[in-house]
Length: 320
Image 1 (tube, one colour):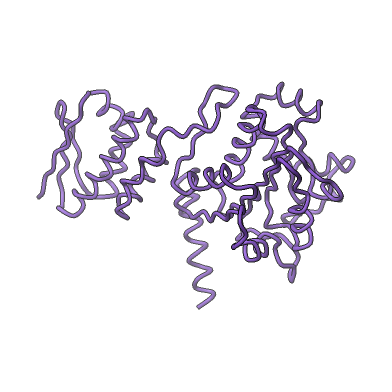
Image 2: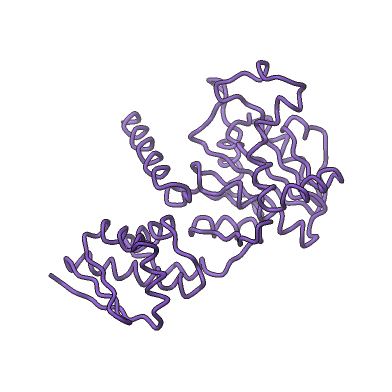
């Protein structure tokens, strides 16, 4: 049995580290097969030498987050574990303190993984950013947060959010109402993100003024969008022609963010995804950034990561 000790400056750090009913430490103990106990200002980790060493790295990474004012959750505990396993726990310093904006309920919006941090930095530094990755990686939510930040800082005059109205197995014609009512369900995730950032009342006020526009992709044709922050969501369901049409709407003083998940394409068979095509064609163009998220960047329930991994393994088996 091997033992290692980590000293903490204040008891509050140990309390935050352990979490309610020791939930954070239980995750570490289960993952590494070690025992972690707190004795005053010391945290003792016992077990096999290799796993004790990795657990110490993870604990130090979590203490770093605590010292930067981060509240620990199952998601960031598991993320720090994945970094410690890869020997990348020192990269956590890049995550700390980057608050994009504050939601209507006073909650700070921050990148939670290195992939998200890189994505946010790409949006800041480039006119067009393409973000591709699995569900739950925060592609749309962070893009909306960056749009709200730019809007509040008067860097842009309006926010435009759009999605292709492509069915995932259902048919638009069977939905009740006029065209706008038919496409609203497809735009709901964009509305939800904006409600979270601005509050329902502010959102409605800005929408009535024309400062915020949420519309299907078909409504973009023939327009030039100046001084705007434009987000195209679910871009994997655009055709090559639609993607070209959308990207060429870019006007002066505008930014574009394109997001999508290339593993969830709902286009008819034989149609190539405009997002896949654009990522290939635009990869060496200046002022255009391409960000690829992995399952490590998933900030939803742990099972979402496990589901993504299982599907990836199945795809690899099919290819072989």
